Figure 1: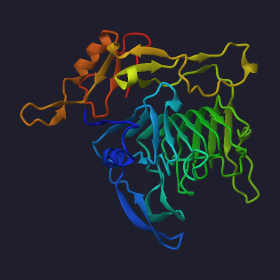
Figure 2: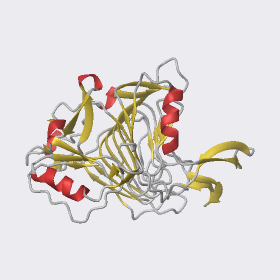
Figure 3: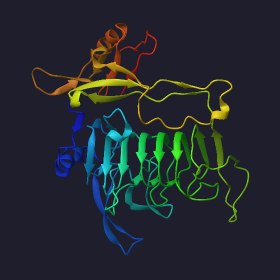
Amino acid sequence: PASVKFLHPSMTSEQIRRIVEPTEDPTYTYPDIFNDNTIRTGHSTERHFTNERYALLFHPGTYTDVDVEVGYYVGLAGLGSRATDVTFENCKRGPYVEAVNKRDIVGGRLGLSLDTFWRSAENFAVTRTADSDVGGDMLWAVSQAAPLRRVKVQGDLKLHDNGAQASGGVLANAEVGGNVEFGSQQQYICRSVNFAGKDRMEAHNEFTSAWNAVFVDCTGDALPEANDGMGVDEKGNTLPCIVRDDTPKVVVDKPYIAVKDGGETFELRVPKARIRADDDAAAGSFGPDLTGEDDDVRDFSTVKLGIATIIDPTTKKEVANHNVAHELQAALDEGKDLVLAPGMFYLDKPLVIKHDNQVVLG
């Protein structure tokens, strides 16, 4: 369907921009009052309640000088079996989310990130070569648990935009070579993340969220110590509550799709649950799994692709498929997995999963 956009490394950055720009949040110019009123370009919230939904799917390969603002109702994903199969190299921004509405001053900052939700990104790497002065870092200033999963960031990962208000997110199955800066994030949960930065996260610095943070199955010397949130810093500010669970009993990552046979066909990859034996706590955290070597790989012949629309034979335009619930349930009854293309599915009855280990993936 038109809601699925495929990108390929053979495309020029201009070709990619023409495809992704209509999915991004609308832009405007504004004076940056904190930098001599320099005129900059920002993004607005005008697509907050649009009916449009998109998937931006990047074929394996290296993408240079490609910047993508991940907008409302957009899922950006690499199509490799390994996170490093899709690489954004030497890009000024790569995939990113910044604070919106920077024409406004909110809490003494330009714009805010409280509205940057309903979007996701996964399954790629962000790198910089030794001869480049740009790239390698990533900005993901979101709220309301908009997830960033299965990524490898060579440099720094910034989860806030210069202190603009932000309210929580999910970072899972990731490796960050530089520092992770939570900044103005009120709360955050990280699961199976390797924090390899040189600066340790502390309860009183910019590398930890403002109110509370949860770290499950995480690794790295930069991890902060647990803190009950009862103390104050030297300025009298309440310290955040920091919770750590280094050795959870079970870790399960979400399924994802990948290409095979040179990009001609798809497969559904289901990571196997990683289960800790009762006497295995001393082995430490599992940490991220970015290779997919132990995935349960399922051929797309056993997958039903769900599409929310049909082509009206009279108008030749896409309209809602009001029979979609019956079609999806029939596939589930056959034991098939469901992969749903972006769209608004109008169901006249609930879908019932009757078989063990079936996947329903948007």
